[in-house]
Amino acid sequence: MVLLAAFAGLTLWKAARHEARAEASHPPGGQFVEVAGHRVHARVMGAGPDVVLIHGASGNLRDFTFSLAPRLAERYRVIALDRPGLGYTPRLGREAASLDAQAALLMQAAGTLGATRPIVLGHSYGGAVALTWAANHPDRIAALVPLAAASNPWTSDLEPYYRVTAHPLLGPVAVALISAWVPDRVVERAVAEVFAPQQEPPGYAAHFGPGLTLRRDTLRANALQRAAIKAEIARLHTRWREIAVPTEILHGTDDTTVGLSIHSEPLAGQIPDARLTRLEGVGHMPHHSVEAEVIAAVDRAATRAGLR
Image (cartoon, rainbow, N blue to C red):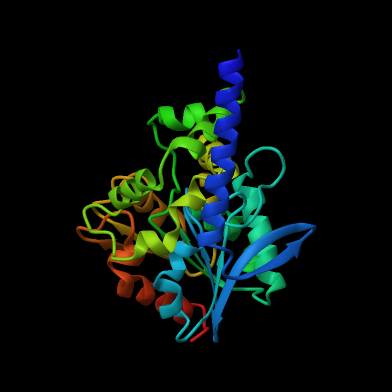
């Protein structure tokens, strides 16, 4: 028992030290806005029509500020947001935030920053949040750009990693062990794999901050969100037909993380007048591998919405 207690104490100490190092090396780069007493971290840049960027699972707004946000900021006012529990936006409540709750929070945060009817671009899990925003708050969005977005039901089971880290009893223990003992290079390898078949851009990992992903609260929030999204999508996907704003969908044909045929191809038929751009040979990170295509889609959405 003494050895177990000592190991537990060492684990908690190492986890806290790891978190402190990650936050010191990659501090908040933007500003905080209050939404009903909840802080949301945002990075705002540029001028022009408003574009809101919503990142995917395990990520933070730094995924966009590496390159896409500065490029868009040449002719748009860009607002990149940290989703609840990730980056520097705290979790909503004790459990994972639902897609509905995340969409409402980020919509209100954008409104506080003056973006009352923005173009909303969401990547991967963030695409599901963006779709929920468009379905639930049709008067608070001008156009929609789902990027490799999770949007329709699938049959595969939740990965064992997320089953453990989302477990009510095992989860808190597992995330403490991961935060304490897993080095940042493991996250860096996982990030590189997500880019396949393309290569991760030079300097991306250093900008993104793998240590931020390994913080205990972030690991736990991400796991709970991943565990819940399948059922949430099954509940919400029939509402995509209600979306009435100009929609430009982009998805790589070689995306093995969120499959084109399962998600974006059906989505293109669900949203009236939605346009699907199939990105040949592209994997799950088109906003890095074919950035110009993503910017062009935002431009098309803005034109269709009468913003340019």
